[in-house]
Amino acid sequence: MIDKPTIVVIAYNRPISLKRILHSLKEANYDCEDIRLVISIDKADDDKGVKNIAKEFKWPHGEKKVIIREQRLGLRKHVLKCGDLALKYSSIIMLEDDLVVSREFYKYACESVKFYKDEPQIAQISLFNYEVNEFASNKQFRTIQDGSDVYFIQTPSSWGQVWTDSQWQKFRTWYDNQEYLGIDYTDKVPSTILNWPETSWKKYFAMYMAHKNLFAVYPRVSLTTNMADVGTHYKEQSNNQQVNLLLECDRHFIFKDLSKSNCKYDSFMESLLIKNYLKIEDLSINYFGYEEKNKTNKYLLTPEILPYKVEKSWSLRLKPYELNIIYSDKGQGLFLYNTDIQDNKNNNLFIEINRVKYQNGSLSKKDLLKIMKYKLFRLTHKK
Image (cartoon, rainbow, N blue to C red; front, top):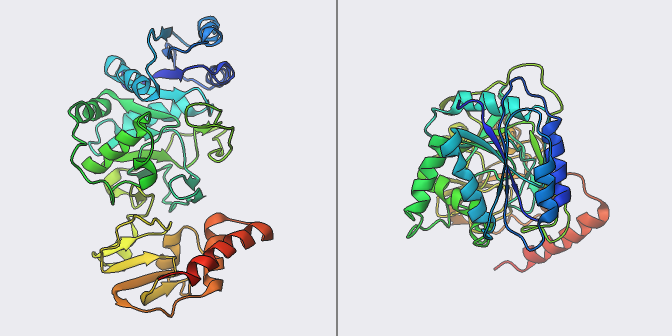
């Protein structure tokens, strides 16, 4: 049954992490029975503790299956193998072992699969909600509120995700046929992702989504959070991606068709909405200051101070960025540049300070001083 996904937990050599996620799964709310749990363990030099935890864990909600890999796969191949279970079970919820789930995660997964399973432009359903932009130095990320429980980004989630068999099969075909070869992703995918090591499956899924112009569905309140335990991608414990979990929900989730939503973001997590308000096609949007972002367009919308003619400007008081334009809040913070015309009169340290505070939230004076010393250096050494 496609709208009753199988839960797949990916484990390697972190017994404490595995114990924690299995406990959070056991304590979650389920309004149906016969929920399948698969625990897949990659081969490690010392994995007896992980194996024992998986085998001894009592799963009261249905069938439990433990898969012990006989050869070391590595994270990318392990995720791909587990993703293939979507083809066997119709739909899966994939969870790496350093996550914790909301008690409402399964309800959200079931309802979202039912709503989006036939939407061809949806590549994946995320259980994680971004509160910062992980591709731009963890600057704050805010979305427009439209009354629904979801928004859409052209980048994949790796901290709790749902795939139907159809969604996974399309990616697998693209990946197996190496359709990613010969394509320049420079202005399609953040360089942060492109520079990830070959152990990353998410790198390929991001390229796939950019290539095929696909979106992932994201919840506005997270159904998972990332504990960032030490492992393949974290050399030390971090709280950078820790987010607020949905504690309870006594109603059905509110979804919106992709075609009817204005809450759509590209792979850089920049809004796709604002072009409709500015009515400018030849426009590049660069809220987060990506150095690699395409600046070949005539017009550029950014809070960065740049040596171009300012056609219009708005404040940086409202969040997210788009609200300053939608509510016509004029000021000196968000600039619409004409990049065909040079203008070097824009250097203003107070504007730069305001931008840093806006993007990073509240900062201590000490932290702000450090940032501004660096920014001042950049301003005075620009060519």
